[in-house]
Image 1 (cartoon, rainbow, N blue to C red):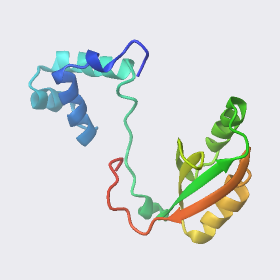
Image 2: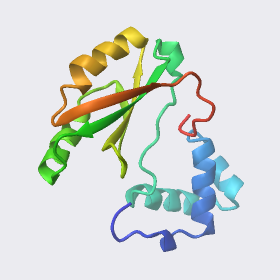
Image 3: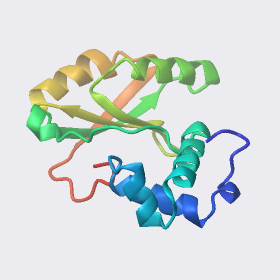
Length: 156
């Protein structure tokens, strides 16, 4: 969200629009308007405001990773040797360049970052860990947890 856009700016119609779009990002504006109880033009204007303000950050296809042969998920704890702002920035920029890292979260924990890494299999993960993740700036140690099954994933 932009700095001047706060939660208070969203009324019940905006929230209805967001709920419907979260379920079906391909819905037509006509059908969206009908579902939230508005006419098409005002609905389209509200939707454009939500996009322009950054509340809606984009629309995308949700692809089944297994259909691409990418059904191995590992979570990697990363501890850094330096946590000053410059070191954090260098790590953050470098993480962006590794396509196998789907998510990267800085945590308040006994380690500094938690990465969600998706690969074809454990052998490929081992290469990504050894050649890419361990080589990221300021990495002092890692620990890996392999997901056996995804029970809930709201991003899909």
